Length: 565
Image (cartoon, rainbow, N blue to C red):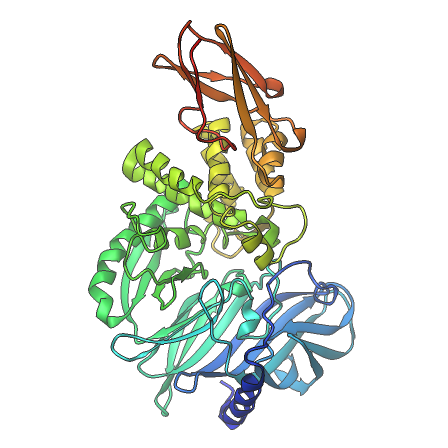
């Protein structure tokens, strides 16, 4: 490991002075949006993150080496790094040898001159050495950065969460969700007895004579840069093994605070059952080669690949307004992202509903497993209350994390879940669940893969294609209304004697041939609606209820009774 002690303290002093001058005016940037042209010239293949953490001073320092493949001729490598962190030097790394490179900082970026134009196909490596006091998260995980807290016993308790702002809040990276490195190595040095829980597989712990330890981890599969996370505390480890539906076993580890070990062991039983549910419903746990870890954190939670952050304090209702659905909803939701977010990742944040809506719907399905149809509908009923229809769920134009997250309210969660619920009604259970499984794993080879080839970037159009292929139906009408429009369709019913005439009104006059159920005198019939219109003959004086089981997401969700005539 390269020694940082010679520059860490002076750089900290510089960083602290600079931070004091601009702490109130420091600009916070969303992650994502259109890829900068100069960042489209290279693809990152590997990050090597080598950092020392000083909890008492709240300082980090070290180096990050980025290896990339040139895809368009360029002499620039542009990485992003928070202006609160001070860069000491930038070097070229080639065949184990290093040489200095010219570089300049522009707000939020490091522009590295490779010295000559590099052709497409060439492999390059650059090392950035830096240090300073990273931005403290005002309200992790929603407003991210570093979290410096103490356990109840007074020990350091540290975490990072940077989905909205990007990894550049604490390490230099290409901050765009479309570019995943093939693998990542992390070497994190902390004072003993602190323990580091980070992404990937722990390879070894190196003890130093100065009372510190370095934890060496390797992420062996592609991973989104925002998902790289530190979790540091005097953790106790609760360790189990899970047998996958593929026949393999993989380690499951809960990094828990010593004072919560008892509660952690009880939650571990639930963690294993959640894993079973996801494997049976969607497919095998995607990252069996690196195992599955849960780290207790001082913030609520995040889906950091292979090491999800768990901060619900063992309160099942911590993320559901206090309601206990019979399972730990925070863990279940973050685990869902190992499939919806980490296995399949939106290639642009415009499709973030694939992460959050799919993840939310999995809780409704688990509520159904535990409580039957009543539990399923109750969970969806609560989610329905959060739908605002402020913006299209999956707009066609590129979005940043802030734009998609805040413009849509909670729709990427609740409305996304309801879109899947309605699709289940249209397709039927067999085709619907096969579509979920096929979207996660397109082939049997992908289901069995552990080498990273199972990981994919996707769009909403990819899911539409899968659902159409599995069902043999054309579904553009469905997704055009639910994903690309802000407002919901509305159904109206007019009674003419014994005939109930039904009509859909979709935003923009779009076609919407959505079938509905009609209930009368204890009988329920399915009414097809070609052209957005349909009718059903009712017994005289029979009162009808349209969509009695709320199968369909619509504007007038609470209206359904048609008076008798």
